[in-house]
Image (cartoon, rainbow, N blue to C red; front, side, top):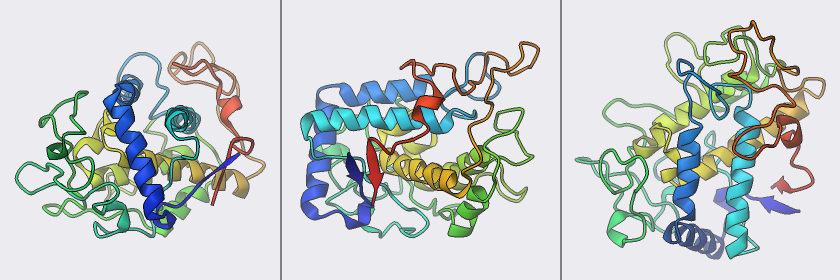
Length: 287
């Protein structure tokens, strides 16, 4: 049993150890394999085939397993490590310690969004982007999107999702507008005046590489999704009588048949089911 801490509570030494392990995974090629995995299973609604990582009920268990595999890789280098979480309802500024020189570095420069501060700056030589290259081989960010400002989700926006007692609803994709915690927290269900909420809004606030299927190119991805995992746990505690939906495999005449996974269907690429990922209590806790 180990603990995932709030990033704001990490000591300087803890930050240094986490960064060192992430850089080593990048150096030996392991990190980019994780990026490729996320990109492979980032399948939008309108694509054919199985949707397992996003825009589907398995969003939470799939990412829980994904983080556990990343954590396992970190712990193989340094057994004392875990993935910290970033509570974006409280640490809401580009000036937060998360973006400091000794941790993730800051926003990108104005002309090309290139991150030039911190250990993941391209000029340091340790973080070339090799998967999903768009702007170049350097990490990009645009914190807060100054040219068209966007704010991080508020505690009220997050509570709006957590208060929904239903896990997910048909048609089990980004268009499920009749409620459902999963879609509200993932962030597709939003008031008409907005385009994103919660999880999605955070990706947009960071900008750059965080806005696509290769989002794990930015190490901020892991801290963001660690908090998303914590929120799923909070929802489960708030609604103990509610569970993962759909519980049974969809009827073969359902238009989402073969495209979303029910409780006991295996999730690629690991072959574990959502049921096996419903609890983390025997593995880790949140501080």
